[in-house]
Image 1: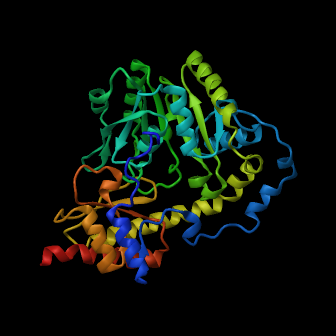
Image 2 (image 1 turned 90 degrees about the horizontal axis):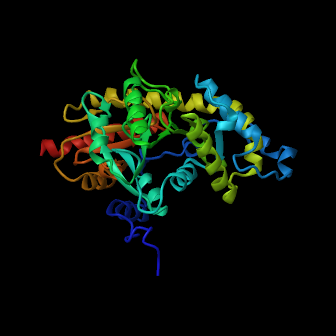
Length: 392
């Protein structure tokens, strides 16, 4: 009696079951999967949430694209990054996940498809399925850095493809689009009348960006383009539920897209008034949190690479931005078995690579958000445990 949009198997995976069992035995872990800033010891300014008590929030003024003050705040945040976008080309949402949902409604009929990168965050398949949309993967290839080849997109696109999704910086690879890749993507999408959706939520967290890194998908305007952001990553406030998308593209196509998005968004009106009214202050006052996160992820990434240098069997793949890192180790067992062994024998939690659609064993993903002392201890345990199968 239930929809086929939901996964047929909702049981926990073996890693989740193993960790739950160990916790029931009283085991305590160093969690190198923690990805929620509010749980990682950052200092938030006193009174930060007081902005939610602004009396203007008592007036309900439903605006499908979002309140003007919120759209102006998002436009100013793009300007901070050197990206120019007008407030009337911004749509306020409750989250980046909702932004995807609205865009799939805008662009796709049931059974249409979107192209998504792999490896990448495993949310896209679920979001698309809930809209009765299929996903087709294009592979990011590692050649000293993770690269996107437009020819790979051409091999998977078909008559029902409606959009290309890119994530820059990517989660978990940390790769960023180059200016050349961005131009090629725009030309590819424009020639096939595909939309380009750019997830840029990690843009404020550079690690080792290359000199050719593109600033934003909005820097080109050949194709209908949407850039996604939000408070969750930009100032470490996921619980406030405010996201946005900025839209650009050829004139008539852009105007038509905005009109249609306005109709869709008017059906839900999901972003709460208090957080929209407070958006400008939250972005300004939360800048100190953003800097703390940026400093920590860079520190932990540096520590991770330094520790890996003493373990020749493993390596940390270069990352240009974001707050995750990919560790490669000998594929002497499945990634899931290794992650379970790390939890059981070393007391460290990591993500196995298959969670992010790596195409073979030997990859692990760690979050760079943990407190520095915990991160160093957990990474040291992880590397020592990864050495063990080679020594046996």
